[in-house]
Image 1 (tube, each protein chain N blue to C red):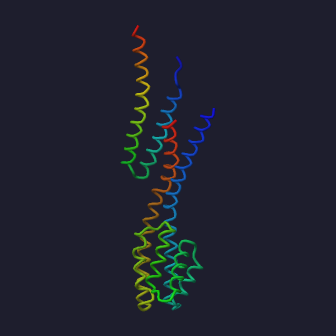
Image 2 (image 1 turned 120 degrees about the horizontal axis):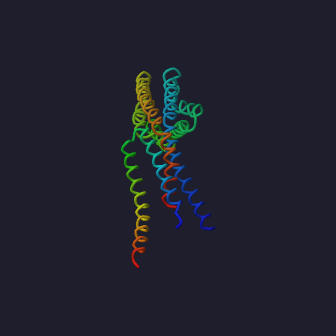
Length: 66
Length: 175
């Protein structure tokens, strides 16, 4: 079973960039935009993760259906 | 292989586009205090021409157009050429100059409101009155410059980073 490192990397880089953007927006006095950005980032990552969780669950289900 | 190359090229294009947008917005913030300062020096020059030189307005505009740099010089150039036409009032010429300035510089309607009112005074009332109005406009521009400088410090760097990073974010989401 090959672990797909690309997705993990993608989420990691996404989080990194969002963190930098949050820092910049916060420093220039736009806290509300920073909050919205973080929320959007979490939602986007959530969707990516949900897609992979879905795959995991279907694999498990396939395993127990003889 | 070709798909990979296409992906890389498209990603580069997206990042390039958002970077350019970010830098363009940042440039507007950077140019505003500078243009305000140049406009101040031009108005000071105009005040000197009026109160000490008693120069006629067309000549004063023409000389200001040669001594200042583009966005401000364009304004006086346009105003001078408008004034050269027969039957144009100073107010009309001044307004035309201001409109070119509005288009070509980083200055907004708010900056130029007080300067626009000068058009009704220039060349009509006596020297002292004109000088007083110019002084008033200068004070307004000085206040705006301080505010513009604050805005620049807050926003210039932010927009640069925002452009690059939002492009990066978009690419990561799309890949």
